[in-house]
Image 1 (tube, helix red, strand yellow):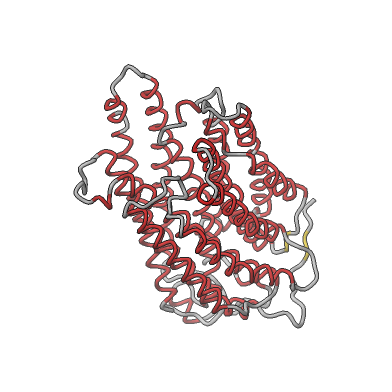
Image 2 (cartoon, rainbow, N blue to C red):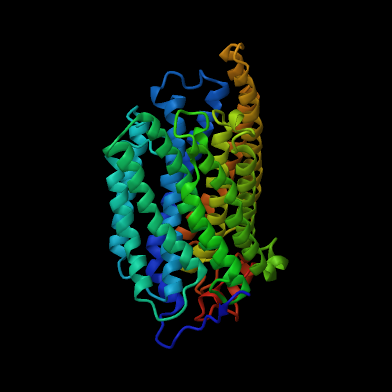
Length: 499
């Protein structure tokens, strides 16, 4: 049975408003910079996708060649958007759950600026032709120490807050956040050491790269998103979720299984024979932590079903969890040796898996948490409910389009590649209709994030300000008359669904 404790702060505990105020600038900085990099990533993705079916598009610009745009697209998505929004969620949730205000705002902001300079240098390095050619690690080698030092300077304060927190139980959301904070330096240092500082045989470099991409998804982005979703589930349930049997099963099975996944992509390569099969087995077993965590959270979110349509945080978060289950099913079906792996291994289907993980699951959960978190730290309500609805609608349509196209197009591309007597140009031409649809899907996602950016800009500018601590979207009439049920000292009481 799930263990819960009431969330009643002690008499000397800082108020939720005080904690939020101390983190307002770091949280908004990382979210805003992340949103800007997300737009850069999507624009690069649109152009790269368009070049698949129109190779002459912008052909006179070497900086905009497909071989540079695609890694720039993924680099901005992973390190510009994904890492920064993850950091924003980590520092906010850890401060809230530890009941400690942030006392190192200047250090965190300085490290954040350095992180963005590093990402910008990496993207420019890729576009100028100085990328490493290693997927997800395309940035020039000098960028990685900068990113690592910046990351450590940011999250060390969350460790300190956790260490000096008032005595009490540790929530499952804190488990996931702490694990993500520890696992990222491990996988980042390991991969960069073996690929850049102590490079070995190129074949083993491919194995390390496959492991790194899998580890980033399952040992960093997944724990951050699950921790945030558990925090929202606790808010919906109105209690502090310590961790029942399902929660513990989900966490520990992820910790044990995920480090072994990823090398199934090397099936058929001249590597030790057991490595692809270990990776395939681990990939299949990831279905266990996914189902355990999602089932537990959906059970906790049960009281919020009646407000699902009106609550953007709940809606985006549940959609992200559904995509996580879809990702686990896809990995089970498409990545096992002896199944369709030979068809998807060298096709756009692999790119589809990455987009399901990074945008379908992680980003949708992060959007849900942002719609909950930003009003808390700014003291404003969201300016336009219509913008939120448009963001939701076009994000879902765009994601469904991109994922369906990459999966179906990947299978078609794989089948065409198997016809080894057929000219390669015919194989490339078979992907053209899918590439057109994929470009359209990315345009829908870009359109969706225009509305998100406009809404976020009004929060930065304090347009439509409201001097109570509640993240809602209400009409001007409701704002003018105020609300007797404003947030109390309990941080979870400050979130209510819109009227």
